[in-house]
Length: 361
Image 1: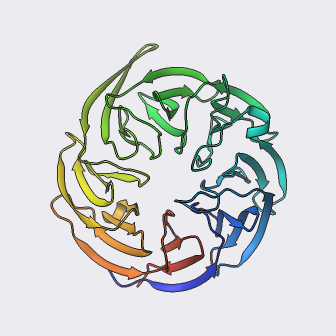
Image 2: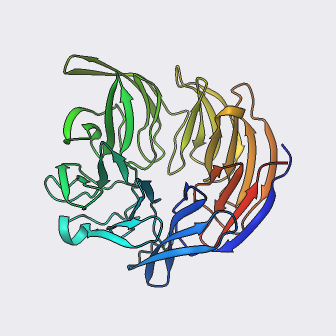
C-alpha cells in the first residue's frame, strides 16, 4: 500500500494498444503521423530499441487516431494487427519483417467503425485473427512461420474482441464471439465444435469473456447490455451449453472485468462493481473511475484500476465492500489503454506518454 515510485517516463504516439512484456522488453503499437509503428522498448528505462513502420493511419472522432490491438509474442516472433487490417510478423529481437498480409486487399476484410481491434491468438501452432471478410473469411488462421492461410471459418459482423483460448471438459478450444453469438473452434483444423447464442445477445462484441472453471464461462452480451454465465458439458462428440443466469448488474462496454474467488469485478458501464459469479447478483457498486480498466493481482487479492483520467487506484478484491487503499496520478489526459504489471513494475500509458512505476516500497 506504499505509494509507487516513478522510475521513468517517455513520450509515445497515440494508440489504444497495451503492452506485451517479454524478457525485459515492452512491445506495443502507436501512430506517428501517417504511419503505424510496431514498437519495442527497453522496460528498464523506456528507451526505444526498434520500430517497424507501416504506412497506414486510422482515426475516428470519438476514439481518435492510432492502432487498437496489442501485439502477441510467440517463439521469438511478434505478431501485430493494425487498425486498418495490416497483419505483420516480426523478429522480436531485431524488428525485421518476416511476413505480412493486408487483410482488406487479400481477404476482403471489412473495416469496422472503430478500426480493427482484435489481438492475435496463437494456439495449436496457428495464429487466429478476425477479419469479417466474405464467405469463409470471417475468422482466419495463419501459419506463424510462413504466414500461409491454414483454415478459415465464417464469422459475421463488426468485432472488437479477440479469439480466446479455453480448456473446457479437458478440450482445448478457441472461443470467438460474432454478431450471432459464440463459436467454439478446434484450433488445429478450424472445425467448429459448437455454437451458442445467449438470450439477450447483441453486438458488436467488444469485451473478453472469463473462464471461471473447466465447465463455465462468463460472457458479455454486448456493448453495455449485461453478462451471462454458461455451463458447458460434453458427452462424446456432443456438447451441451446451458445459460445458468443472465444479469444486468454488470454491463461492460469496452471495459474489461476479472474473476477472483467466486466474484466478478469490473465496470457496470462507467461505475465499478462487484457481482456474485454464482448467481449474477450485485454485491456493491461504488467506484467512479470513468471508463477505465482493471487488473487483478490474484496473489494479493487486490485490483489496480486505471481510471479514464490517468490515475492508478489500488482496491481490495473484497465482495463485502468497496475498499480503496491508494490512488496516484500517473499520466495527464484521457487513457483507455490497459495497464500491465511485470516484475513488480506497473507500466501505464495513454496516447502521449508511457510511465513505469515501481510497486516495491
